[in-house]
Amino acid sequence: MWADMTMKTAVRTNVRKISFTHLMTASAALAIAMVAPRAHAAWEPSAPVELVVPAGTGGGADQMARFIQQMVTKHKLMTQPLNVVNRSGNSGAEGLLEVKAAQNNPHKLIITLSNLFTTPLATGTKFTWQEITPVQMMALDQFVLWVNAKSSYHSPKDVLDAMHSGAPGSLKLGGTGSKQEDQLISVLLETAGATKLTYVPLKGGGDVAKALAAGEVDLTVNNPIEGEKLWREGALRPLCVFDGNKLGYTEKIAGQQSWSDIPTCMSFGIPVQYLMMRGIFMAPGASTEQVAYYQQVLAKVRELPEWKAFMAQGAFKANNLNGQPFVDWLDRAESFHRVLMREAKLMAPAASTVVTTAPSPTQKK
Image: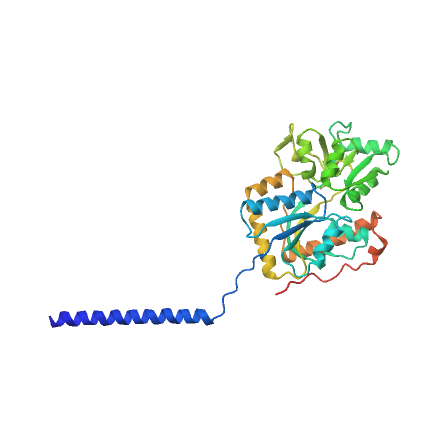
């Protein structure tokens, strides 16, 4: 009995010791939690995020921006809403300058295209890409030579023959804006055809495609995504792609034709190769954590099957860059566009004196 009582007493004593020890440990942990600094939480937007499109509605940039918005909303990739707004004034300078002015505003994004380079050069606008924050290149966009489906032009050779035989300016080429990528390609086409085209500036890629379908212009150099719907409906016909290689998508779009069936313009003696960036930037002063947040959101978008279908629909060329490789690409692209714009005589006099060798953007730590 004595042994049994001793054991019970020992058990009770151990229980008290264990309980006291646990209590002290829990109290100490609580005290430490109260006085210790909290671990740094990952940054997230605290207000609705605005995605600026420096172009009109219906064009390639607008379609990609709205598709990203749909995917973010559908799959709940952000806790705050993502809103798309178009700022197309002055060849997109309105949108570029709006984002440049939004210093330290992490809720302002912009989807960029070649007017990131061409607009400052063409208008003399005091803007360079180094003044905003690169986040992510999403893809490279192609350019296709399009005609109306009822046109007598069935190959790039037919177009070249018509340019050679017709009076200068007799063919009308519709494009987005003035002194932007569409007009730049039209000048390169003029060089290849040794004649002049009449360039018709329109608000955006959607308007350009509609003008061609209505017979208001003879040719366009729209992006694939801008002409795909009307090609599928039998209103437009693609003749060639301005790239060194054929497009890689084999799904049939119209009749028995796929994107991969379109020949390169270069194979018909048109030495023009031009691809356009689709990239996301932030306002100046974005921190590393803020950039990383949007990069991971966009990475989730790119992993979706819907994104892969969108890439195929628009025959995009995958080229996902961020960080220093993206900055290096932008440096090269800016120099390339400066040469093209100067040779095409599309530069504003003031642009020739604009310094574009500013240091690469730095992020707040």
